[in-house]
Image 1 (spheres, rainbow, N blue to C red):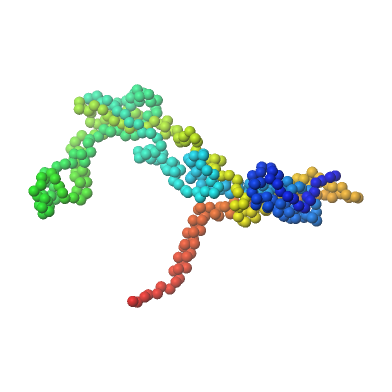
Image 2: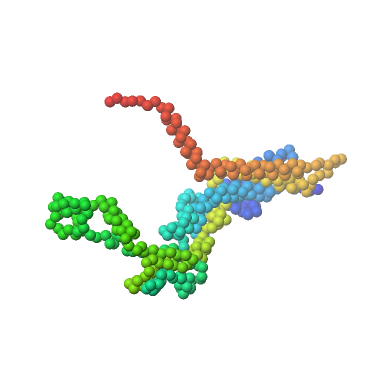
Length: 383
C-alpha cells in the first residue's frame, strides 16, 4: 500500500491554498512552511510517519486564519451594527476603520414616538380643510376622506384647528391700569414724554404670562369655549359655526404610512443586517502575535482532524507477521474538542474587550484609583 508521507519540508508557492486569500502576503508565505514543520513535529514526525502533504498543511493554515477573521469581524459587526445600519452599501471596507458610534439607529427607533407626539418622526402629516356650514355642528370625516381619495379607515386625525385666537395676539392694552405703576416708572427714567403705547422698560416675563392667563381664564369662564369632539370619524364642533366662519383646518396621517415597516433606503441600497457589514478577510501580516498563536493552535487541530480522516481510510496497515492499528478516532475526538475550546476561548476574549466591558473596567479602575488617593495624607499648609 503506497500512502503519501510527509517528506519533512516544503516550499510554499502562491496558488497552493484552496482559496488563495493570503497567498500574496509575504508573511503568510513564510509562515506557511514554518507551520507545516511545526504541525508535523507536534504530530510525531520524524518518529512516526505523517500521512499528509504540504497542501494539507497550507489548507489548514488558510482555514484557521479565515476562521479567526470570521470570529473577529462577526463580533465587530455585532458590536457596531446599530452604527452601520442605514449606511450605504458602497462604503469602504471597515477592516482598518475606527468605527465612530452614532445615534442614527437610535433616533430612527425613536421616530415612531415623535409621530405620535407631533414633533417629527417618519410618517407624513397631511393637512386639509373642511367647508363649514353655518348652523351645522356635525361633520363626517369618512365622507370627506373618500372625496380626497383616501381609503376608508386609513385616516387618523391628529389635530383640529378650531379654537379662539391665542391670547398673546389679543394682549395689547397699554392704557389699562396694570397695578405696576408703569407710567411712574417711565417718568423716573425720563421717558414720560413719549407716547404711553411705547414702552422702553423691559418688564418681567411673568407679567406677560399672568396677563395671558387672565385672558384665557376669562374666555373659559365667561365665554363659550372653542372645542370639538371626535368619535369614530364624526367631528362635532363647539360653538355651532356662524356665518363668519368658512373653513376648518385639520392635520391627519394615513395609517398605511405608519404601518409601513420599510424605511426609505434609496436606489443604491443600505446596510440592513450583519451579512452586509463591509468586513473583508484579515490581512495576515497585520495580525499580532496573540492572534497568530491562536491561528497556529487552531490550524494544528484542523491538521489533526484531516490526519484522523486519512487514517480512518487506512485503519490497519499490514506489516510482516502483524498489523498496525492507527489512531483515527483519537485524532478526530481530540481535534473536535480542541477546536471547540479554542473558539470558546476566542469569543470570551472578544467579549472581555467589548465596548461595554472596557468602559466597566475603566470605571472600576477610576474608583480604585480614587480610593487609593483617599489614603494620601492631606497636609494643611499655613501661609
